[in-house]
Length: 86
Image 1 (cartoon, rainbow, N blue to C red):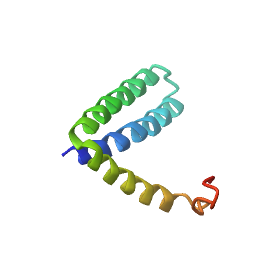
Image 2: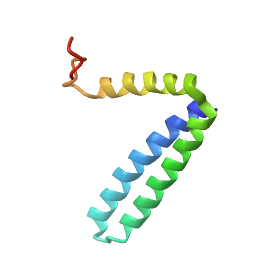
Image 3: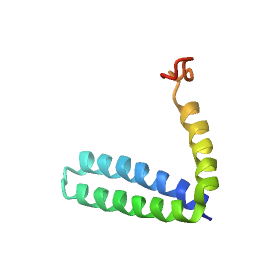
C-alpha cells in the first residue's frame, strides 16, 4: 500500500505543478499558483504517509521504479561514471 501511495504522490506533485502552471499561462490568473502550492503540499503529505507505510523495503522498490522510468525518459542519461559522478 505504501509503495502505491509513494508513486501516486510523485505523479500528483509533478503533474499538478505542470497542469496548474499551464493553466496560469493560459488563463493569466496568478491565483492558480495557490492551487498549485496546495496540490504540491498534499503530494508531500502523501509522500510522508507513504514512507511510513512502505518502510525501507518499499522505499527501495519505489526508487528502482522511478529510476527505471526517469532514465527511460531522459535521452541524455548514460549512467554513472566510474568515479560516481553523472
